Amino acid sequence: MISGRTVNLNALSLKHVIPSSGTQMLALASLGDDVFVARFGSQKVEVYDADTLSLQRSIKVPGLGQHPFGLMPCVHSIVYMSLTGTTSAYTEQN
Image (cartoon, rainbow, N blue to C red; front, side):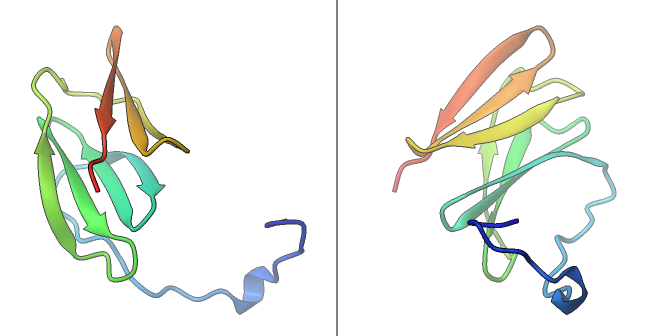
């Protein structure tokens, strides 16, 4: 169910694909018009346009490490990243 209504999964179709960069995608979150992607071994989070999935920018995150565990958006325009042994937050500036 989405927003109290049933969704027919057979009616859904693939519209866009986030391009592969040769490294495994470990975490993904959407916030507003942005989709955030963290990849294995990268020190940055890629930010894609939610409608076209074209890369808009990258956010350098020193200490991100090899294995970001997850990304979680909240209603206050913040994306939280869970990292190995610590928690960091990135605030989206509009």
